[in-house]
View 1 (cartoon, rainbow, N blue to C red):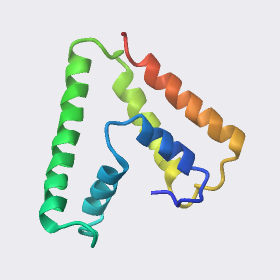
View 2: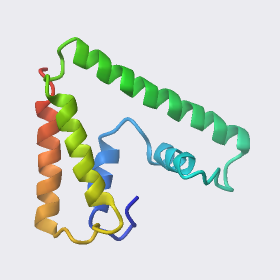
View 3: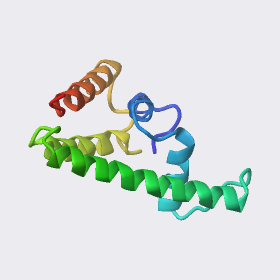
View 4: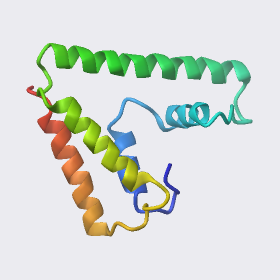
Length: 123
C-alpha cells in the first residue's frame, strides 16, 4: 500500500471510505496476503476470527457482484470497466509511481473513479 505521506494516499482513502471494509480489515487482509501474521496488540483468537470475517466478506462481495451482473443491475460492460480501473489504480497506488501525480490530476482520478462507479449501475 502507499505510504502515509504519498499523494496516492488520497485515492486509497477514497477507496476505503466507499468500500465495505474497515481500515483494520484491510490491514488484516494485507497481512494475510504478505504472510506477515498478526500484530502484537491482538490475541491470536481475535486475529483469526477477523481473518475469517474478512474471507467471508470478500466472498460476499464477489457473490454480490455475480448477483448484480446476472440480474442486470450492473451495466453489461461493468466488470471489464472495473477490471481496467483496478489495474490503473494499482499503478497509481504502487510505491514506484505514488508521488508522480500532481494534486489536480489526483482530484481528476478520484472524480473519474466516482463517476465510473456510479455509471456501472442501472439503478
